[in-house]
Length: 157
Length: 76
Figure 1 (spheres, rainbow over the protein chains, first blue to last red):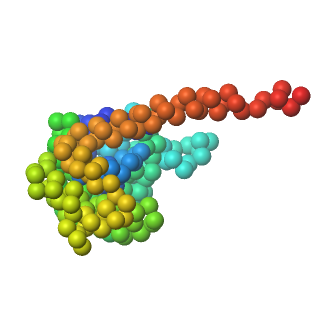
Figure 2 (figure 1 turned 60 degrees about the horizontal axis):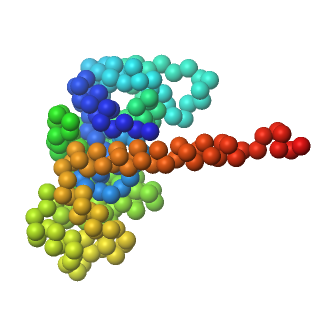
Figure 3 (figure 1 turned 90 degrees about the vertical axis):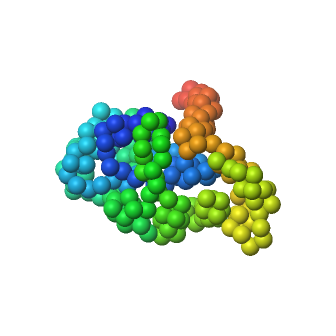
């Protein structure tokens, strides 16, 4: 199961440029939605890829859909050669998104974020507007089901 | 954090508001009210506690399921 505090502290301590998106961002805004993984949109410059690779490396990151028999190398080159990664780690499941549907890549995600204080770090978190846009764009039933709550939270903010 | 007018809006959402639509959709506005009283970090800690509780609740079930799984001897 996910260890949210440890992963967030880990990424922040390594100064990885990310924006928290998805269910955890919803929780941070006050949603009662329950999620079991951490979704982040990450910046793609090489230095950030190196920091991200180094941060997760001790925690056995591996694509969740990759058969165990197949080898997997986790480093900045792997990140460079891919875009979105759904990883299992020994701290829980982490989804790394180079792009978020309905919003864009890291620069757009950063523009569509607010800073929240979490465990002593300033963390970027999707705004409610960005969450709503991304859920609408994703368009799956599970995404559409959370829209009424997100819109209610936006009205409250 | 919530002020009194926010709490009042949650308890009695104006007609045609997003809050009223969410309530009619089935969203429990009292849960939103409870979470909005917390800091973001406290909301995350709450989520972690729920996840941990769920894991703890599932662990004995997993063992029980495993214990009930038929073995080759059961076919005798």
